[in-house]
Length: 231
Ligand SMILES: Nc1ncnc2c1ncn2[C@@H]1O[C@H](COP(=O)(O)OP(=O)(O)OP(=O)(O)O)[C@@H](O)[C@H]1O
Ligand SMILES: [Mg+2]
Image 1 (cartoon, rainbow, N blue to C red):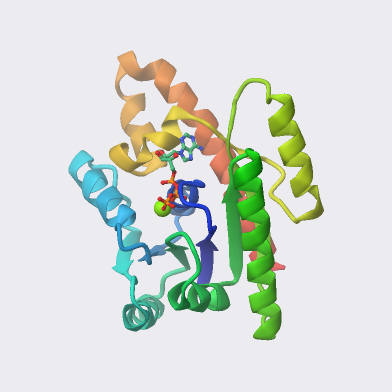
Image 2 (cartoon, rainbow, N blue to C red):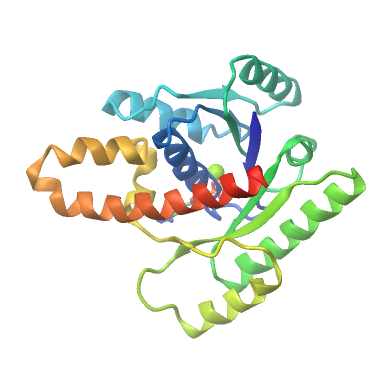
């Protein structure tokens, strides 16, 4: 089982949304995913409940509560015994012993960030924190910054300048764009299953096209992470 974590000191940087997208992409590829809920607001549990209600939960995925160290330990053991292909951990903002343990146990660390000066500052601090922790523990993990909620139209000069500051760090070459399909996941459920249910409804054809775009972008992120983990 490979563990992938989205983390950032910055609240609202798009961690949970990136993780939900990634989970949908893995499930669409037939992979099994253990979702570790390390945020005590429990956004993944809410996601699952909404999705089950809408018939858009992929049974290849399960949520494990992991918002305390002992629960994380138990979740990890259960997920590994269950033969899951991937564990995706959703952290709460800030630093804590729980977050440190998750970082140290991950094979891939994604740092999502929006393109404002404040967000970039926090992303750089988070990245530095992760690298220092890995070095101190003599661990190796793949790391990448993920530009999150990038406007679909033209980026402003200030967003462009903010993005330049990230160029020194490894990053996923395609950003996660600001899309309704991504924002609506928490209500509508897994991206690929929401899309499948739309295709059968002629009135939703235009929306289905937007979902196809979102799905292809998130599939690229999934392929990028998978390739790094195989190398
Ligand atoms: N790519 C995107 N397109 C549109 N909306 C997005 C996108 N990514 C995130 N959002 C929205 O931005 C808000 C914050 O995102 P999210 O909850 O994923 O951030 P977070 O880092 O997990 O926050 P927290 O620190 O509270 O856990 C949410 O309302 C979400 O729907
Ligand atoms: Mg979150």
